[in-house]
Image 1 (cartoon, rainbow, N blue to C red):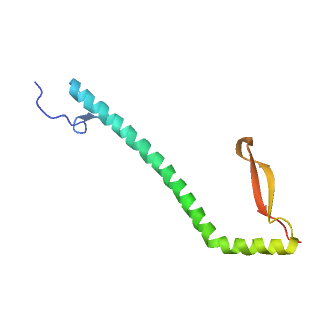
Image 2 (cartoon, rainbow, N blue to C red):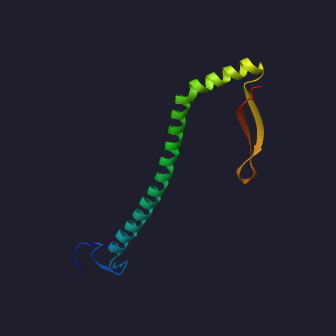
Image 3 (cartoon, rainbow, N blue to C red):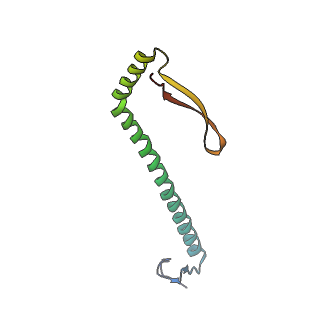
Length: 107
């Protein structure tokens, strides 16, 4: 009877772990499932962190440059007496359309 505690790292042959009993196979299976889940989480967390950085960075950019945008809007309104923003339909990635907004031209 095998009385030792199963450790998948100590009984490796190459990159395969040896499991001799049902309990050892279950332990090894859960170990593989856990590693796969952890790797997927790490990959996804990188994408989530990038998205969070993009959102926080763009919000900071908008807050810092909002006085400049207000001055530009005031200058456009005083110069043209028309609308401040110009909108146009454009074709984007994968052929999807989107509405683009710009400051209207002065003069």
